[in-house]
Image 1 (cartoon, rainbow, N blue to C red):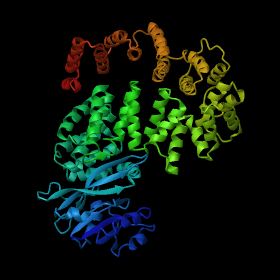
Image 2 (image 1 turned 120 degrees about the vertical axis):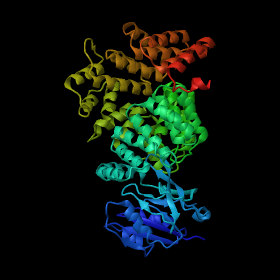
Image 3 (image 1 turned 135 degrees about the vertical axis):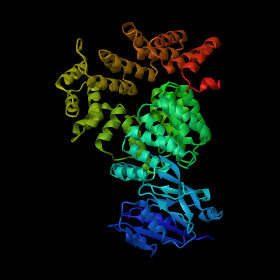
Image 4 (image 1 turned 135 degrees about the horizontal axis):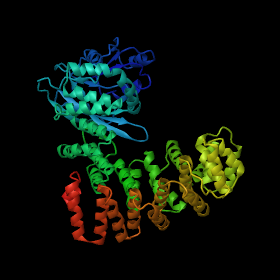
Length: 625
């Protein structure tokens, strides 16, 4: 049996330290803790577990503190943890160190908010008395890089759980600004790949993407064989994406996928950037490849090969109105991780768009989401409240819950119990702007002056805007009145809620009013109609718009898409071709190809494939087909 020491540096870690130290009981033979200035209960907690507690004045140097801690270790091996980390219960370090490597790469599982997690690899276990020590004031690391020595390494199954990741990232953003001068000094003194990489990370954290790209590009040529190389590529491409340089990022990712075929995060990002560029077929194929591989790689965002990939696919198919496929993937996402709020919300949104009866929605959801704790119930209620979903009232009553009165009012309103909702709204004090549009909508549904006046106190609109809304409530003519952006957005959101409530008479009235708005508002309304399968109404409205705006590119694309939905393939071909006369847009070529595919015209399919191959070298599917 080899002996192991846990070596830590701490400062004000009373909230986390006990859990960390409990996790190493029976695993390590020695615990060494170096405190750098705690003024809470950290030291007392540490002394419950070990006598090896030391003090060191902080010197703005993480490597100095780490080296201070490991000098007290008297064991064969050293394990390094931070206070907000702990060992997974099933860990077997003795099994891992039997091969007697110099250092071991472990998995760090970072728990994030909203049911998400990431995983990366790091050196946290290494042999004592073999000349290994920490370097760098910031981003300290063992001296295994560029030392001219042949240290033996090993990849392990040891998993360290890190619970403070989200808070730490936010904290790092503030610290990054303060630490820029220190990091620049480190790069100046030792411009190796690791330091250049961390300089790029630092500039990424503070949002200076151009500078981050410069350092990451310089780092890559020096780091191709290093453990952090895949993360470096990811960071470089993310910075390019932040600047909208998706094509440049895709060029890098295409090569990176070939070099790192089992890095799921790289493949997932490639799929996302394909979609950003309108490469729908490649995005779908690549994201399905993520599902085949699963969560593997040196640095892994949990779910990129599972529930997050399913979520993305559900989102993309929904955007193309392919609801059967969208539903299939959102069900898979929720089943795999029912803590992801975005997936829960997407489930209800998709069910609304295909007009599933509310009882069927309730029964389907019960099959995939088991309410086994108060946290899960609260998560569900928050989603339903944000969506203004009619099932909110059902769950509140089923569990006999006491909630804030405004939540109860929303629940009754969107369950179409308007009189009860009206009474609650009128009795409430201290309402906020968040409920202003709810009350305005109800005032129009009920033609209620009191509610209308109440909404006035909550929404920041001009006198003229309120005059327009009052005329809408009273169903008066608005001929010659030009809408403001505020009015257009309120009417567009109101139309969506009226679809949910199936209040089609008032929906038609509001639709007529919204048609006096800008072309952008009209197109957004048509997009909503298409999304909720009102294709016949949408095509009539779009055709009228086409008579007035025959050169509007967004309109031409929507007409083409709607014609495809209705099976009017020749008409779709006409609008897509007309669109290509004014724009060079890859996504239109792909849409035309799909039209010819459905018409089974192989000759025209070949023509489009050739054009895509010539104009868009980053497109992969034409080369695979």
